[in-house]
Image (cartoon, rainbow, N blue to C red):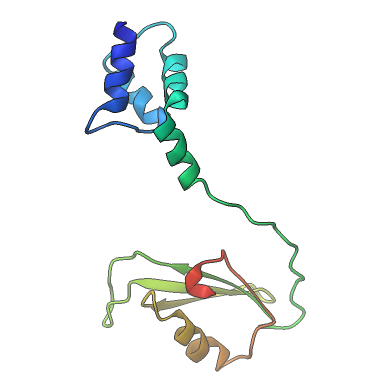
Length: 145
């Protein structure tokens, strides 16, 4: 009965409830011990409907990976990623930067920007000076689509 009380208290606690298995184990191992405590924590977490729904809700969806033909000329194929949630910096208080890698020469370009200005930035700073790309490879970030 004491084991069940410990599991319930650590799992249902108002301030620390429904943590990951690892966090629950860290919390329990500092306050209690019994021979099968790790197995019991895992089983208890797996029996919690709320935890299982949360795990499924945050589970990342993976997409089919396809082979992208290598570029035969400069600026034909580029990789793009937007790095956001940065502290504002510079004269214009940029809070993100766009990373573009031209696949033919592997040249990286780092463009400071505001997280919502990517389309204008790509047009004014890259396409205007080079050409339209045949392929853009990204991580499906909605800001780049």
